[in-house]
Image (tube, rainbow, N blue to C red; front, side):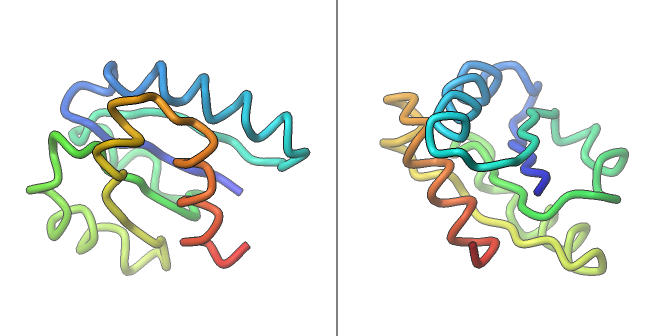
Length: 101
């Protein structure tokens, strides 16, 4: 399963990606997790299952959902507290729940 985290520049989510990867490994969950900027999103839709949006760009949710829907991709905004505290396990659970896993 491919999970994309989207923020304005793709940088602020990179630490969270590391925490999510650690949580996935600890749980034995096989997935690919990457962070991209909103402007790069179109290049990464093909094999993506879930898109999680950084809370600082939640205003882009409608636009991102419109891009993702034709590909059957689920979209949600990352919980602000989990994002701020870098709770990779919680954000991973959010992605898995969104994907129906």
